[in-house]
Amino acid sequence: MHVLMVTLMVTNGSVLGFPGLIQRLLWLSVQCFLCDDGDDGDVSFRFVYFETLSRICGYLVPQMVVISSEIGASGTFLIEILVERLLCSDMRPGLKDDVVYSFFDPEISVLKEMITLITPDHVGMFREMYGGILKMVFRLTDRDRSAIHTLLQFYDPGLRCFVFPDYLLGPLMEDYAGILGIQIRNQVPFYATKEEPDIGGISRALYLSPEVTKGGLKEKGKLPGFHLSFLETKAKEYADLGDWKAVCALIAVSIYGIILFPNQKNFVDINAIRLFVQKNPIPTLVGDVYYSVHNRNEKRRGGLIRCCAQLLYKWFMGYLPSRGVFVLLDHTVNWETKLMGLRAKDIAWTHSSGVGQDFICSCGGFPNVPRIGVQGCINYNPTLLKRQMGFAMEVPPLKSEIQETFYFPVEGNQSRLTKRVEFTRLPFSVGDPWYPLIEESHSSVSMEEFLEMKRERDQLHAEKTELEMSVARVQMANQEIKGKLEDQDKRHALVVKRFEIDTAYYGKVSQALESSTREHDITKERLARASKVIEDKKRRQILVRDQREDRVRVLIAEWEAKLKIKETENVKIIVERDHYLAERDHYFRQMKIHQKEVGRLQQENTELRFAVKFTRMVDDVGPSVGPSSD
Image (cartoon, rainbow, N blue to C red; front, side, top):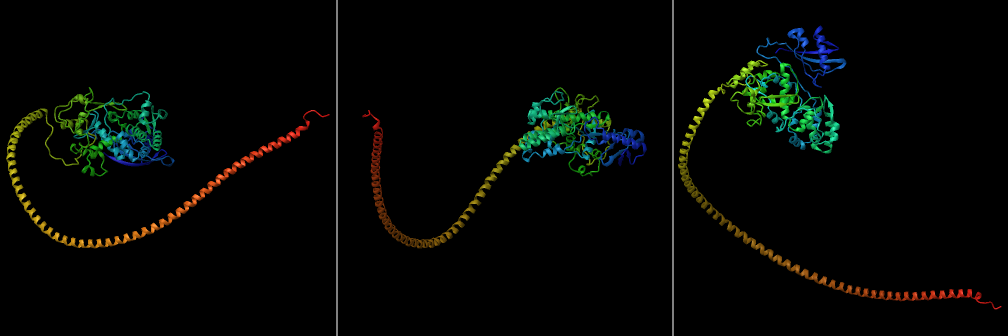
């Protein structure tokens, strides 16, 4: 491929580096690129095809232009243009034309900020509920996009997989399930519908009230859904309240709409929401990638790939070598050169945890697996991809299993693949292998040879079984004799060992007795000294005890004398108290007598006062009573 990097400065309709008419045509194309959003939503395209220029200027005019622009002052744009020579089929013999693809470039800064709301204690809860979708929140670099773009050049619409020089690759549902840590459920798969959103089901899945859910649903691109800002606000509110189930659900549905099933910028549409509620995204993810790639590869027209590019990148990188020459290659080596240097033996076929396990090879009455994506329905052919699950392709698949009409003769897989490559052609020239080739015998044979070898193998297996039985009988007899000899040797060894143990034991006993005698003499001396010390201590203890007893007797006598004095004083106090009580009682009796006398005198005084008042009243009334004497 002949490539020329040209940096242009576009200012007010002028292009530096191209003369006259080419300037105006390029300027019009750039204006169209910058102003027109296209029919694919709010997506920033990185690849543009200038058909007008190629017709005017021949093979030196750009066929593919990669533009990365930053708006400067006064309408100035800095544009980097990758100019590729227009190579026709006659200039690239045996190779098919390149197809230009573009991918969604979601803004993940908001998602990154939302993910920081999950505390380390609740990351495990998120993983248990929604799998490993957090690792899908990353932005593809230009080199990552180049890897996917190169991979898509190998897509074969007839086989519905990626055809390389001597091997096939294609995303399996089991591959995606292993990457995301989400199980494939046995249920009716998702299909797009125009029915009204199920407010109740969405509310339960997001742990929101029906009123909040209904109020948050908006319309964009003729589809209802949630704006990412709404989900971010609610996630922060529930994080402050400590409702971590709601926080995890809101973050998960945001990843579904922005990363796994992208459609509109910063908008989670109803299809992504229904997939989140259904909790079975794997079949739809696989359907999206096959349908979108197949649709854009039709007639080699290219365009926007509507699938999760991050997941497709992770899947592809999993099969590439992780060590050796391939990893040590300089980063400036382009992907087509790197991939064309790989062979089937270099691919990491066993990197998946599901290798060797059962996988979905057909569905219902279909000979292959039909998948319904968000944009459409398509089938893919797992029978061609058995090697990715650790199985060999011993017989060719039926025509119905791959839904193709081309002839598939009964021969080795490698020859069939070679003919398919010759028929469809590869996008790049085959380079030298990165890893040395090892001479090996052919593993693919015809069916007749295979059946003959199988019969011979069965016959040899029967003969081997008889020989093994004979050998087993001889070995059993030999084992019995050998066992008897070993028993005798063991008994003799035990006797010798027991004699050695007894001899050693008696020697140790003699040494122990001598040592014990010496220790006994030393102990007797220590005991005599200790007895003397004890007798001295006893005499001192007796003397101290006598002194203490004398002191106790003296103290007892002193306390008894003091006690007698206190008893005498107490008797005096009691006598004085009794005398005081007797005087108090006498005083109270006299007081009662005086009170009675005072009461009697007061009564008499009252009676006398009444008599005096009555007498005065009689005297005052007396002269006016009775007839006059005149």
